[in-house]
Amino acid sequence: MTSHDPQDAQNFTFAAQDEVAAYSRLQELMKTSPMPPREFHANLGLFLNRPSLARILFMHDLYSMTLHTHGVIMEFGVRWGQNMALFTTMRHIYEPYNMSRKVVGFDTFEGFPSVAPQDGDFDGLKVGGLAVTPNYEDVLADILSAQEKLAPRSHLRKFELVKGDVTETLPVYLERHPETIISLAYFDLDLYEPTKRCLELIRPYLAKNSIVGFDELVLAENPGETLALREAWGTQGYRICRNTISPQQSYVVFE
Image (cartoon, rainbow, N blue to C red; front, side, top):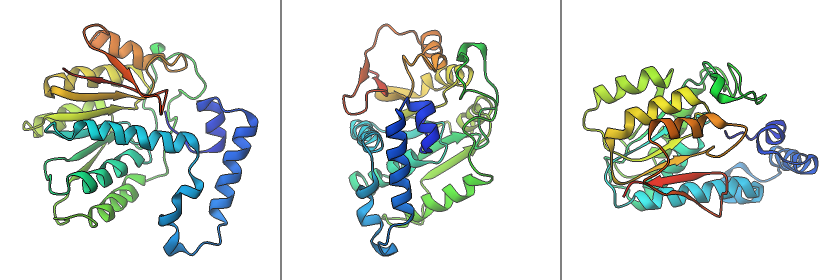
C-alpha cells in the first residue's frame, strides 16, 4: 500500500505528526519551487524523502536480479504507476534492446472492488479505497509512452495497462498471451482474494530465478497478503527475502 498524501502517510506508514508535517512542507516547497521547469527533472533528489528513495532503490534491486532471466514484468496493483515508470526507465538503462521485457500493470484504477473478512478491519481497507482520479489510466499511458520515446525502437510499445478486477482480467490476459514467462511479479494489491487468485494463476508462468515481490507481507494491518501467500503456495520450501534498504517489502526467488 503506497501513498504520497501527507494524511495517508500517517494512516498507512505510521508516521509521527512531526514527520507528516515535514512531508507536507516538502510538498509545499516542491509546488512553490522557483526552479525553472526545464531543470526540475535533473533535481528531483531535492524533494525525495527517505522512504521514497528507499522504495526506488528496492525496485532497482529487484530489477537488477531479473536481468539474466527471460520474461516480462507484471505489477499487480499499479495505482499512480511509479513502479511501472521505474521499470521502464531501468529497461532503458540496462537492456534498451530487450524488446521482450514488457511491463504489464493490472489495476481497477477505481480503488478496491471488494474487501474480504481476511483483510482485517484497518480503516484504509474499504471498497473504493486508494482510488485514483477519473481516467487516470489514460494519463499514465501518456507518461509511459513519453518514457518509451527516450529509448531505442520507441515505435514498439513495450508496456500494457490492464484495467479491471484482476481476478477477471488476468486469466483473459494469460489466455491471449500463451507466450508469457514472468521474470518479475510485484504484488501491491493489499487484499486477500485477488492476491491469492493471482498467485495461483501465475505459478505455471514462473521459471527458475523468477522473482515475486510483496509489498505487505507480515504486516498486521494488511493480513490478507500473507494469508493469500500461505494458502496459495505455502511459506515453506523457499526463502522469503528482505532488503535492509526498504524494510517493509520482501521477495521470493524461485530456485
